[in-house]
Length: 127
Image 1 (cartoon, helix red, strand yellow):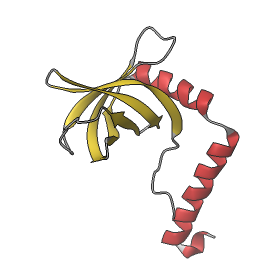
Image 2 (spheres, rainbow, N blue to C red):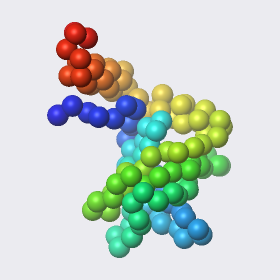
Image 3 (cartoon, rainbow, N blue to C red):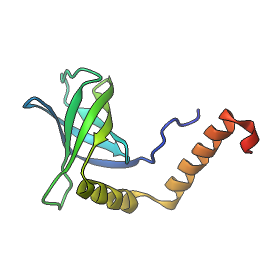
């Protein structure tokens, strides 16, 4: 199966809060990319797909969490696929550093290979 994601994801397990209109949904981050995240929500959490939320990600050893405006794209079996809609430049800088620190050369090579395969499937003249 060819990967459809445009952004490289890294595994990261840490505390999160998905909030909307002062309603907080606690969860645990499973992985993150420059464009989104996968969050495991607590059992029994009901959140509407397609709605806008704020996502707060707490990083160990850091005083301030990462803050994102986000859209809930998918939810199944307690796992929420979240697309980042907006975040400030400080969060972007910190996210870039986090992604670089957690990424291995093998991870990056695999993502680039998957992108190449996707382009090749779309236009065989690419190869």
